[in-house]
Length: 258
Image (cartoon, rainbow, N blue to C red; front, side, top):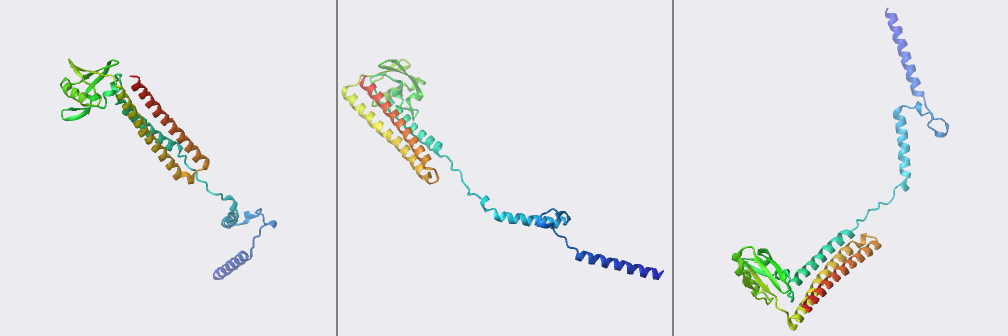
């Protein structure tokens, strides 16, 4: 029995040595031409490393695949024009309010809007505490919301530079608009001209502010875009200047024709 065990152990040892020698001498080669046709004989891990190495090599050579990064330049045109339009429009609206304060020979409700009335110790605009309406071409009616404020309203109208002498009529005040003298007309036309120039300067300042904004961004914009936006700002300026001029001419005509 012992003899059989010793023979079995010797046989197993010889088989193990033969297998080890065979593994150490086996060499696997790719087919001719370097193709991967026989790559299936490789272990999966060896094939993975081989393919990755080829991929890395290709990546180093593909320098032409990398292009220059082009950043999109935002169009500042709409923002610049919107801001300029808002500022110019505000100037024209302010001019309209200023011109409405000037008296002409014709009665208009807006000619009393700028009058401030002291009511309960607080100064408020007349059109906030009374309704002003036109009775005829030369007469206004002022109806206070609170009848107790009639005296204050009457005093405020008399104290204004309009030259109107109102008279009480029940719960309302009648304000007759006297005709303008030649001297009054000339003086009022000068005021209109000065007001027009003041508010046109506001429009030009809005234009300059827009052009300065464009200039700051010009280095990152195409030249054609810069010229286009500048042209659009100039057109806006001309539009609002014309609007202010037309408004003043209409006021001068209203004053002179009274």
